[in-house]
Length: 577
Image (cartoon, rainbow, N blue to C red; front, side):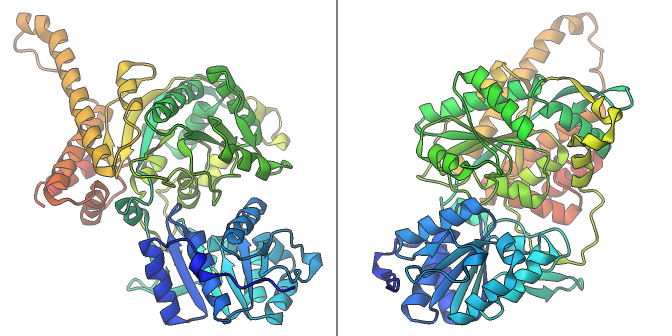
């Protein structure tokens, strides 16, 4: 018995961006259509509505969905079944064809790459719509890209979806359109774009507060030398990697202090109206994931769910956690993309991965809004590159072919070499040891702006930020952070005045000690943010767009990475706008 045609009248109402993109799709009626929408915006619902439309008017007879992971196959099939589209998530390459009970199948990019001819024959047998979820994965390897192209060239329609920045390499993505810009470089072109800034304005996603933690770190290198550095201070990339590794060491003090703060924030959100709010710790590898789970149990008295991608039953554990009220989930990449757990509201970014693509995928797990006013909080190391990515949450990126490599960007390969435990590297590698690390709240990043001054973990200053209300609009978050920062700075000035009152009486001509470079950068960054906030209140422009305009006019990286001279130039520029 053939699968029934889905009933369009029973489909859930579409959001404004989905309706607009659907009208554009039906108007064009082209073979290929690329939709870019921020995580949490509803790409799955949009794609399934298109599938239902094409099945109903008999443009296509079958649907094939290509997803990045096995878990997402099940998620796609479940979502499709709710709207009357039956997809076979258990299809294997050896099956050759799906049962007539199904409208089609869900497969992975790896499946297609292993046997593209199987999927090509399936595509040629019936008029097929192919939905390529997170299409950037087709560029993960040449075999995957070639396989996708060979398998689905005969498709009547192809719908490409992505919710994160496109790739930073030069691997062309099959079926994505590229246009040559004025600089001679080819850039990907999307047919529909719905970014994080748009979704935030429409209350479709949550505002995200990034709480960046710095601190002093000490470690012993594989050559036996002891080194110390302050996490977040400017230094060479290899020192950043070593300091970062030291901070993330589960045996040190940095991670327990940050996890304690994250759990406190989770409690605030639960008490403030998000009763089932959950937390996610994203770890670098399986061993540290298990260690973080033990720390959570020690700190909270409650066991955390641990999800490892190669464990049997991982999908079932994710589903169980999503439907429960358990506090913490610990994972290694398994839930970095596409997995839908709307109650996740607190994250700890405890991984070495630092590409824009991976960062956006990870943060996308926390932005899915269920009702107006919900906020998300993500705790992360105060590493300049990560701070830059956090400041540019609203940036829209295209895939650029032939672009020169950015030597100023963080080297993921270098960090991975510093983080890994290579069994073949001998005794020298094993002699690396994280000696100590302390955590302090360095800054809170929201809407491209930085708020607050350094606060030691466990102090009232830190608690002021951990205790921010959990139900706030984006404008309320910005206003409250600005007020908190002003109160913090005023309190610091009062304490400083009290401490210097007596020495000043004895020596009225004594000048304050000169600031070092780090203190100057902090002061200039605060001044810049204050001026940007003032312009925001005058013009209504988001902080992030004002910062982006200053970068366009003055050049240079985000303010978290900018030099003293670059900050001074931006201050002078914003005063003239």
